[in-house]
Image (tube, rainbow, N blue to C red; front, top):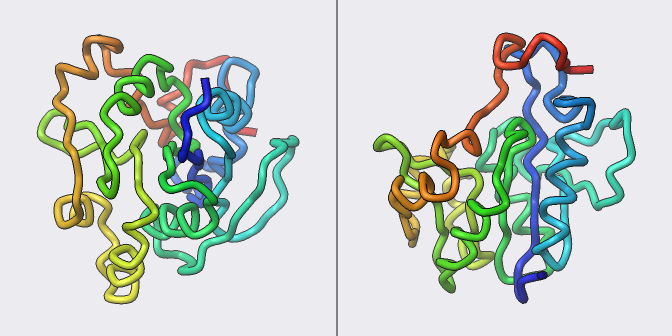
Length: 197
């Protein structure tokens, strides 16, 4: 069921140097991760965007709008800013394109705790996991200020911004091994039969 006032965004601007290939082209289980994540977001969001960083061709159709960074080369914080700038709804559910195993039930936990004008993220092992996370458009001025000042860390930004931190135990109830938070950063993170095309 789609959630009122919620856009969805996938950050796909990373160069994937450790993966030795564009992360936006990542394929796991014979399905492009971007395609899998778009379908996941389409079930709950009014619209889905891909924050592509710098525009480049994708090797497969995704069927959603691609948006470029306003602050090129500034990392995930710039991707969040681009997504929120382009979103038509009041908040964005943001995923990263290198997270192929996000559980629907984990998304549901985030959505149950959605709060106006607050980001919502999980705290895992004392670390704030920015993705998946909910980010309201009301954070745009703070995001822009941080980017202009060169304060590019998402962790630091979340600690300064209005934010709801969800405890690890809530994540483990629906994802006991926390595989939703797995990032594919190198070929070794993928089983042998899976690949980055």
